[in-house]
Image 1 (cartoon, rainbow, N blue to C red):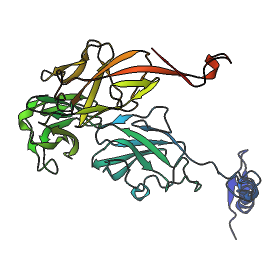
Image 2: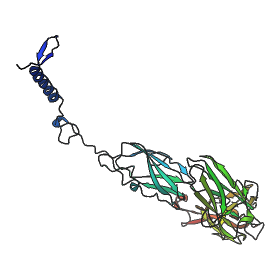
Image 3: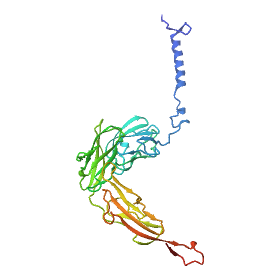
Image 4: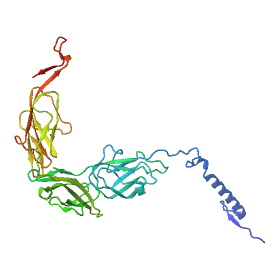
Length: 389
Protein backbone atom coordinates (compact mmCIF):
# COMPACT_ATOMS: atom_id res chain seq x y z
CA UNK A 1 0.00 0.00 0.00
CA UNK A 2 1.52 3.36 -1.07
CA UNK A 3 1.38 6.13 1.52
CA UNK A 4 0.00 9.51 0.44
CA UNK A 5 1.77 12.76 1.34
CA UNK A 6 -0.32 15.65 2.58
CA UNK A 7 0.35 19.29 3.37
CA UNK A 8 -1.77 21.55 5.51
CA UNK A 9 -3.60 24.18 3.50
CA UNK A 10 -4.43 27.77 4.56
CA UNK A 11 -7.74 26.69 6.05
CA UNK A 12 -6.14 24.15 8.32
CA UNK A 13 -7.04 21.23 6.02
CA UNK A 14 -4.67 18.96 4.17
CA UNK A 15 -3.66 18.92 0.53
CA UNK A 16 -2.12 16.13 -1.40
CA UNK A 17 1.60 16.78 -1.86
CA UNK A 18 1.46 16.29 -5.61
CA UNK A 19 -1.31 18.88 -5.85
CA UNK A 20 0.64 21.25 -3.55
CA UNK A 21 3.74 21.00 -5.71
CA UNK A 22 1.79 21.76 -8.84
CA UNK A 23 0.18 24.83 -7.30
CA UNK A 24 3.53 26.11 -6.00
CA UNK A 25 5.18 25.72 -9.38
CA UNK A 26 2.36 27.60 -11.08
CA UNK A 27 2.61 30.50 -8.62
CA UNK A 28 6.39 30.72 -9.05
CA UNK A 29 6.07 30.76 -12.84
CA UNK A 30 3.52 33.55 -12.62
CA UNK A 31 5.80 35.58 -10.29
CA UNK A 32 8.94 35.31 -12.42
CA UNK A 33 7.00 35.98 -15.59
CA UNK A 34 5.74 39.24 -14.09
CA UNK A 35 9.18 40.30 -12.76
CA UNK A 36 11.32 39.24 -15.73
CA UNK A 37 13.50 42.07 -17.18
CA UNK A 38 11.86 43.37 -20.33
CA UNK A 39 14.65 44.12 -22.80
CA UNK A 40 12.39 46.41 -24.82
CA UNK A 41 11.61 48.52 -21.77
CA UNK A 42 15.11 48.59 -20.26
CA UNK A 43 16.29 52.22 -20.28
CA UNK A 44 19.93 51.06 -20.36
CA UNK A 45 19.36 49.14 -23.58
CA UNK A 46 20.29 51.30 -26.62
CA UNK A 47 17.42 49.66 -28.56
CA UNK A 48 14.80 50.51 -25.95
CA UNK A 49 12.45 53.38 -26.56
CA UNK A 50 13.29 55.04 -23.26
CA UNK A 51 17.07 54.89 -23.78
CA UNK A 52 18.73 58.33 -23.95
CA UNK A 53 22.49 58.31 -24.61
CA UNK A 54 24.70 60.64 -22.52
CA UNK A 55 26.34 63.01 -25.03
CA UNK A 56 26.96 65.92 -22.63
CA UNK A 57 30.64 66.71 -22.11
CA UNK A 58 31.82 66.66 -18.49
CA UNK A 59 33.42 69.83 -17.15
CA UNK A 60 35.46 71.06 -14.22
CA UNK A 61 32.93 72.49 -11.77
CA UNK A 62 35.63 74.02 -9.56
CA UNK A 63 39.14 73.49 -8.23
CA UNK A 64 41.10 74.17 -5.06
CA UNK A 65 43.08 76.44 -5.43
CA UNK A 66 40.61 78.33 -7.62
CA UNK A 67 41.23 78.26 -11.36
CA UNK A 68 39.77 79.57 -14.58
CA UNK A 69 37.56 78.95 -16.46
CA UNK A 70 35.78 77.27 -13.54
CA UNK A 71 36.02 80.42 -11.39
CA UNK A 72 35.67 84.11 -12.15
CA UNK A 73 38.92 84.84 -10.32
CA UNK A 74 41.78 82.35 -10.21
CA UNK A 75 43.88 81.93 -7.08
CA UNK A 76 47.49 83.05 -6.97
CA UNK A 77 49.99 80.51 -5.65
CA UNK A 78 53.65 81.08 -4.97
CA UNK A 79 54.71 77.58 -3.94
CA UNK A 80 53.93 73.98 -4.76
CA UNK A 81 50.46 72.92 -3.67
CA UNK A 82 48.18 69.94 -4.32
CA UNK A 83 45.19 70.62 -6.59
CA UNK A 84 41.70 69.22 -5.98
CA UNK A 85 39.36 68.96 -8.98
CA UNK A 86 35.57 68.79 -8.66
CA UNK A 87 34.00 67.36 -11.84
CA UNK A 88 30.41 67.92 -12.94
CA UNK A 89 29.70 64.17 -13.17
CA UNK A 90 31.31 60.79 -12.42
CA UNK A 91 34.47 60.20 -14.43
CA UNK A 92 35.87 57.09 -16.12
CA UNK A 93 39.65 57.57 -15.94
CA UNK A 94 40.17 60.48 -13.57
CA UNK A 95 41.98 58.21 -11.11
CA UNK A 96 44.56 57.21 -13.73
CA UNK A 97 47.84 59.12 -13.26
CA UNK A 98 48.68 58.71 -16.96
CA UNK A 99 45.68 60.94 -17.78
CA UNK A 100 47.51 63.99 -16.39
CA UNK A 101 50.57 65.51 -18.12
CA UNK A 102 52.66 67.68 -15.82
CA UNK A 103 51.42 71.31 -15.79
CA UNK A 104 53.25 73.86 -17.92
CA UNK A 105 54.09 77.54 -17.41
CA UNK A 106 57.01 79.98 -17.36
CA UNK A 107 59.53 78.62 -14.88
CA UNK A 108 57.10 75.89 -13.80
CA UNK A 109 58.62 72.47 -13.05
CA UNK A 110 55.78 70.94 -11.03
CA UNK A 111 55.47 67.15 -11.06
CA UNK A 112 52.13 65.31 -10.63
CA UNK A 113 53.14 62.13 -8.81
CA UNK A 114 49.80 60.68 -7.77
CA UNK A 115 46.01 60.96 -7.90
CA UNK A 116 43.78 60.48 -4.85
CA UNK A 117 40.11 59.67 -5.44
CA UNK A 118 37.87 61.44 -2.94
CA UNK A 119 34.61 60.25 -4.57
CA UNK A 120 33.27 59.65 -8.09
CA UNK A 121 33.41 63.36 -8.96
CA UNK A 122 36.30 64.62 -6.78
CA UNK A 123 40.00 63.88 -7.25
CA UNK A 124 43.16 65.38 -5.77
CA UNK A 125 46.32 65.74 -7.85
CA UNK A 126 49.30 65.11 -5.60
CA UNK A 127 52.19 67.44 -6.53
CA UNK A 128 55.28 66.47 -4.62
CA UNK A 129 58.11 68.39 -6.26
CA UNK A 130 59.08 71.26 -8.53
CA UNK A 131 58.95 75.05 -8.61
CA UNK A 132 55.98 77.23 -9.43
CA UNK A 133 57.53 79.90 -11.67
CA UNK A 134 55.58 82.96 -12.81
CA UNK A 135 52.50 83.73 -14.89
CA UNK A 136 49.85 81.11 -15.62
CA UNK A 137 50.13 77.40 -14.84
CA UNK A 138 48.10 75.29 -17.30
CA UNK A 139 46.74 71.84 -16.44
CA UNK A 140 45.88 69.57 -19.41
CA UNK A 141 42.80 67.34 -18.94
CA UNK A 142 42.29 66.37 -22.58
CA UNK A 143 42.73 62.64 -21.82
CA UNK A 144 39.80 62.54 -19.37
CA UNK A 145 36.44 60.92 -20.23
CA UNK A 146 33.12 60.46 -18.44
CA UNK A 147 31.39 57.07 -18.05
CA UNK A 148 29.90 57.40 -21.55
CA UNK A 149 33.24 58.24 -23.14
CA UNK A 150 32.63 61.97 -23.59
CA UNK A 151 35.77 64.13 -23.54
CA UNK A 152 35.96 66.91 -20.96
CA UNK A 153 35.31 70.47 -22.15
CA UNK A 154 37.06 72.86 -21.70
CA UNK A 155 40.01 70.50 -21.52
CA UNK A 156 42.39 72.80 -19.62
CA UNK A 157 42.29 75.00 -16.54
CA UNK A 158 44.74 77.61 -15.28
CA UNK A 159 45.99 78.77 -11.90
CA UNK A 160 47.84 82.07 -11.49
CA UNK A 161 51.44 81.70 -10.35
CA UNK A 162 52.90 84.65 -8.49
CA UNK A 163 56.65 84.70 -7.95
CA UNK A 164 58.05 85.82 -4.63
CA UNK A 165 59.18 89.44 -4.62
CA UNK A 166 62.42 91.13 -3.61
CA UNK A 167 61.96 94.80 -2.74
CA UNK A 168 64.17 96.30 -3.94
CA UNK A 169 65.55 93.70 -6.39
CA UNK A 170 69.08 95.09 -6.02
CA UNK A 171 71.57 96.09 -3.33
CA UNK A 172 74.84 98.05 -3.26
CA UNK A 173 77.41 99.43 -0.84
CA UNK A 174 76.29 103.02 -1.39
CA UNK A 175 72.63 102.59 -2.36
CA UNK A 176 70.24 100.06 -0.87
CA UNK A 177 72.06 98.18 1.88
CA UNK A 178 69.41 95.49 2.27
CA UNK A 179 66.38 93.95 0.59
CA UNK A 180 63.14 92.41 1.81
CA UNK A 181 61.99 89.07 0.34
CA UNK A 182 58.22 88.64 0.59
CA UNK A 183 56.85 85.13 0.17
CA UNK A 184 54.04 82.88 1.37
CA UNK A 185 53.15 79.27 2.08
CA UNK A 186 50.08 78.42 0.00
CA UNK A 187 50.40 74.66 0.46
CA UNK A 188 48.01 72.72 2.71
CA UNK A 189 50.96 71.74 4.91
CA UNK A 190 52.75 73.44 7.78
CA UNK A 191 56.29 74.12 6.57
CA UNK A 192 59.73 74.31 8.10
CA UNK A 193 61.82 76.73 6.05
CA UNK A 194 65.39 77.89 5.44
CA UNK A 195 66.36 80.89 3.30
CA UNK A 196 69.55 80.30 1.30
CA UNK A 197 71.64 82.15 -1.29
CA UNK A 198 73.35 80.87 -4.44
CA UNK A 199 73.97 77.28 -5.47
CA UNK A 200 72.03 75.28 -8.03
CA UNK A 201 69.40 74.05 -5.57
CA UNK A 202 68.55 74.04 -1.88
CA UNK A 203 71.21 71.40 -1.23
CA UNK A 204 74.10 73.45 -2.60
CA UNK A 205 72.99 76.95 -1.53
CA UNK A 206 74.44 78.70 1.54
CA UNK A 207 72.31 79.63 4.54
CA UNK A 208 71.42 83.33 4.54
CA UNK A 209 71.72 85.66 7.51
CA UNK A 210 69.09 88.18 8.47
CA UNK A 211 65.57 88.38 9.82
CA UNK A 212 63.17 85.46 9.27
CA UNK A 213 65.73 83.27 7.50
CA UNK A 214 64.52 80.07 9.23
CA UNK A 215 61.50 78.84 11.13
CA UNK A 216 58.05 77.34 10.66
CA UNK A 217 55.18 78.83 8.66
CA UNK A 218 51.58 77.64 8.73
CA UNK A 219 49.50 76.91 5.66
CA UNK A 220 48.49 80.22 4.10
CA UNK A 221 51.10 82.10 6.11
CA UNK A 222 53.15 85.03 4.75
CA UNK A 223 56.75 85.89 5.65
CA UNK A 224 59.01 88.90 5.06
CA UNK A 225 62.70 87.98 5.12
CA UNK A 226 65.21 90.84 5.48
CA UNK A 227 68.68 90.28 3.98
CA UNK A 228 71.72 92.57 4.29
CA UNK A 229 74.07 93.69 1.48
CA UNK A 230 77.27 92.01 2.69
CA UNK A 231 76.24 88.42 1.88
CA UNK A 232 75.61 89.11 -1.83
CA UNK A 233 78.34 88.74 -4.45
CA UNK A 234 78.69 91.01 -7.50
CA UNK A 235 76.09 90.40 -10.19
CA UNK A 236 72.96 88.27 -9.91
CA UNK A 237 72.26 86.25 -6.77
CA UNK A 238 69.54 83.61 -6.43
CA UNK A 239 67.75 83.68 -3.09
CA UNK A 240 66.06 80.35 -2.36
CA UNK A 241 63.29 79.74 0.14
CA UNK A 242 63.58 76.02 0.92
CA UNK A 243 60.50 74.59 2.60
CA UNK A 244 59.99 71.12 4.04
CA UNK A 245 56.48 69.98 4.99
CA UNK A 246 56.44 68.92 8.62
CA UNK A 247 54.28 65.91 7.75
CA UNK A 248 55.91 64.60 4.54
CA UNK A 249 59.50 65.81 4.47
CA UNK A 250 59.42 66.75 0.75
CA UNK A 251 61.37 69.83 -0.29
CA UNK A 252 59.48 72.68 -1.94
CA UNK A 253 61.83 75.40 -3.27
CA UNK A 254 61.00 78.86 -4.60
CA UNK A 255 63.46 81.54 -5.63
CA UNK A 256 63.97 85.17 -6.57
CA UNK A 257 66.93 87.10 -8.03
CA UNK A 258 68.71 89.93 -6.20
CA UNK A 259 71.41 91.90 -8.03
CA UNK A 260 74.44 93.47 -6.40
CA UNK A 261 75.28 96.55 -8.47
CA UNK A 262 77.95 98.99 -7.27
CA UNK A 263 78.00 101.14 -10.43
CA UNK A 264 75.79 104.22 -10.68
CA UNK A 265 74.11 105.26 -13.94
CA UNK A 266 76.23 107.87 -15.71
CA UNK A 267 73.79 109.23 -18.26
CA UNK A 268 70.12 109.48 -19.05
CA UNK A 269 68.62 111.10 -22.09
CA UNK A 270 65.38 112.49 -23.45
CA UNK A 271 64.17 112.90 -27.01
CA UNK A 272 64.36 116.69 -27.37
CA UNK A 273 67.07 119.23 -26.73
CA UNK A 274 66.74 122.91 -25.84
CA UNK A 275 64.69 124.68 -28.49
CA UNK A 276 61.25 124.89 -29.94
CA UNK A 277 58.81 121.99 -30.03
CA UNK A 278 55.33 121.52 -31.41
CA UNK A 279 52.74 120.48 -28.84
CA UNK A 280 51.43 118.00 -28.00
CA UNK A 281 55.00 116.77 -27.79
CA UNK A 282 55.93 113.17 -26.88
CA UNK A 283 58.93 112.90 -24.57
CA UNK A 284 60.89 109.69 -24.07
CA UNK A 285 63.37 109.28 -21.21
CA UNK A 286 66.04 106.62 -20.96
CA UNK A 287 68.66 105.62 -18.40
CA UNK A 288 71.82 103.72 -19.32
CA UNK A 289 71.76 101.39 -16.30
CA UNK A 290 69.31 98.81 -14.94
CA UNK A 291 66.83 101.61 -14.31
CA UNK A 292 64.23 101.17 -11.61
CA UNK A 293 62.50 104.57 -11.70
CA UNK A 294 62.72 107.95 -13.43
CA UNK A 295 61.11 111.07 -12.01
CA UNK A 296 60.61 114.56 -13.48
CA UNK A 297 59.33 118.06 -12.74
CA UNK A 298 57.94 120.77 -15.04
CA UNK A 299 57.74 123.60 -12.50
CA UNK A 300 61.42 124.56 -12.47
CA UNK A 301 62.29 122.72 -9.25
CA UNK A 302 64.77 119.86 -9.11
CA UNK A 303 63.22 116.38 -8.89
CA UNK A 304 64.32 114.50 -5.78
CA UNK A 305 64.14 110.97 -4.40
CA UNK A 306 63.81 109.96 -0.79
CA UNK A 307 66.33 107.09 -0.66
CA UNK A 308 65.59 104.64 2.17
CA UNK A 309 68.67 102.38 2.43
CA UNK A 310 67.67 100.26 5.45
CA UNK A 311 64.89 99.74 7.94
CA UNK A 312 62.18 97.71 6.29
CA UNK A 313 60.74 100.20 3.77
CA UNK A 314 63.82 100.07 1.54
CA UNK A 315 63.42 101.90 -1.79
CA UNK A 316 63.17 105.24 -3.56
CA UNK A 317 60.08 107.45 -3.45
CA UNK A 318 59.64 110.83 -5.19
CA UNK A 319 59.67 114.00 -3.09
CA UNK A 320 57.94 117.38 -3.48
CA UNK A 321 56.49 118.05 -6.92
CA UNK A 322 58.41 115.18 -8.50
CA UNK A 323 56.30 112.87 -10.64
CA UNK A 324 57.05 109.32 -11.70
CA UNK A 325 57.76 108.93 -15.39
CA UNK A 326 56.00 105.98 -17.07
CA UNK A 327 58.77 103.93 -18.67
CA UNK A 328 56.19 101.99 -20.65
CA UNK A 329 54.08 104.80 -22.13
CA UNK A 330 56.31 107.90 -21.85
CA UNK A 331 55.11 111.48 -21.29
CA UNK A 332 53.29 113.94 -23.54
CA UNK A 333 53.91 117.65 -23.00
CA UNK A 334 50.68 119.65 -23.37
CA UNK A 335 51.74 123.07 -22.01
CA UNK A 336 52.23 126.08 -24.29
CA UNK A 337 55.09 128.40 -23.56
CA UNK A 338 58.46 127.72 -22.05
CA UNK A 339 58.70 124.51 -20.02
CA UNK A 340 61.83 123.47 -18.17
CA UNK A 341 61.67 119.69 -18.05
CA UNK A 342 63.97 118.23 -15.35
CA UNK A 343 64.51 114.55 -14.69
CA UNK A 344 66.43 112.11 -12.53
CA UNK A 345 67.10 108.35 -12.65
CA UNK A 346 67.62 105.73 -9.92
CA UNK A 347 68.70 102.16 -10.62
CA UNK A 348 67.53 98.97 -8.88
CA UNK A 349 70.45 99.14 -6.43
CA UNK A 350 69.62 102.67 -5.25
CA UNK A 351 72.17 104.74 -7.23
CA UNK A 352 71.22 108.12 -8.69
CA UNK A 353 72.59 109.04 -12.10
CA UNK A 354 75.74 111.15 -11.69
CA UNK A 355 76.51 114.62 -13.08
CA UNK A 356 74.58 117.89 -13.03
CA UNK A 357 72.86 119.21 -9.92
CA UNK A 358 72.44 116.15 -7.72
CA UNK A 359 72.24 114.12 -10.92
CA UNK A 360 69.38 116.22 -12.32
CA UNK A 361 69.29 116.92 -16.05
CA UNK A 362 67.03 119.37 -17.83
CA UNK A 363 65.98 120.77 -21.18
CA UNK A 364 63.77 123.70 -22.10
CA UNK A 365 61.02 123.34 -24.64
CA UNK A 366 59.63 126.56 -26.19
CA UNK A 367 56.33 125.18 -27.42
CA UNK A 368 54.40 126.21 -30.54
CA UNK A 369 51.06 125.25 -32.02
CA UNK A 370 50.28 124.65 -35.68
CA UNK A 371 46.83 126.02 -36.40
CA UNK A 372 44.74 124.44 -39.15
CA UNK A 373 42.44 126.30 -41.54
CA UNK A 374 39.45 125.84 -39.22
CA UNK A 375 41.05 128.35 -36.84
CA UNK A 376 41.30 131.08 -39.46
CA UNK A 377 38.96 132.96 -41.79
CA UNK A 378 39.20 132.59 -45.55
CA UNK A 379 41.10 135.86 -45.64
CA UNK A 380 43.65 134.65 -43.11
CA UNK A 381 47.29 133.75 -43.62
CA UNK A 382 48.44 130.88 -45.79
CA UNK A 383 47.97 127.58 -44.03
CA UNK A 384 49.47 126.10 -41.96
CA UNK A 385 50.44 129.04 -39.79
CA UNK A 386 52.73 128.84 -36.74
CA UNK A 387 51.69 130.85 -33.71
CA UNK A 388 54.44 131.28 -31.11
CA UNK A 389 54.01 132.14 -27.44
